[in-house]
Amino acid sequence: MLMPINEVMELSAQRVNAQALLAVRHSEGRSRVHRLYQEGAAKIRLPEVRDDPLEAILINTAGGLTGGDRIAWEIEAATGASVTVTTQACEKLYRSRSGRARVDVRLSAASHGSVAWLPQETIVYDGSSMSRRLEVDLEEGARALIVESTLFGRKAMGEVVTRALFRDRWRIRCNGRLVHAEEFAVGPDVAATLSRPAAMRGSLAVATLLLIAPDAEMLLSEALAIAGDEGGASFWRVAGTGKLLARLQAGDGYSLRKRLAPLVGLLNGKAGLPKIWTL
Image (cartoon, rainbow, N blue to C red; front, top):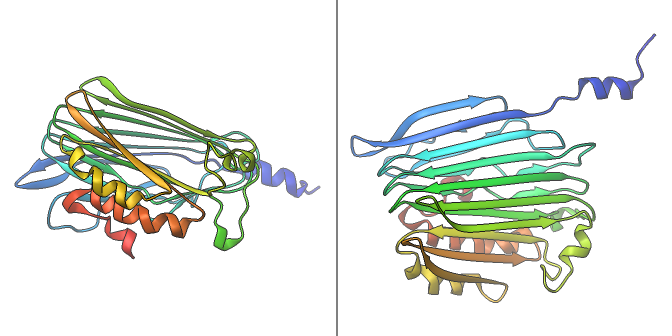
């Protein structure tokens, strides 16, 4: 007797359980790979570059995340080393039948090291459920640029997100001192939340950019000009370093990217945009 097809699908369903680590150190005049570990669907590819920073591309070979999936990324920059990390494509959060997808990101930079976390946009689909945690530890004189951008459906594709769960938790520390913490939570009634004037006023695309660097204040005026009326930027001096925080929102992903790309290019210094962003 044949098993009902829905039972076959339930038994054969697989869940992503993946992790990857990249450790970079400065050796012979440039940043080089010190350790590289990959497990499951988490892959790291390293395009050839001639100068610092070392550039890494993260790939989720599962093609997206759904309920029950787990993926973890860890990036370490040793003293004087610099690394820019991006993704091969936008991460997609698919409809969840049960459970929640979980993403864990750990970044660290030793004294005068630099790490730039620049993934392409996360696309939230209707019915998806995801919780992401970002932990960053920096030593004195270290530099970090952290960017996360999210699209609640793609307007050009006619996608509408009414119900979903999206959680994003950031904790950034300098010399063991907490310098930035935030919780971004939307759902389950996504449409109602995004329409509120105090939230996103109907915008479907949002980005947060955080630069921790001693010289961050010098970039504030340019950041404000790029952010425009549908965004903003501010600066604080804390724990012996500088903190520049910028937020963008837009009605669609294309409009967001038009301001996001130049702002990332500004805040990422001489490294500019990851090459894959311009392909």
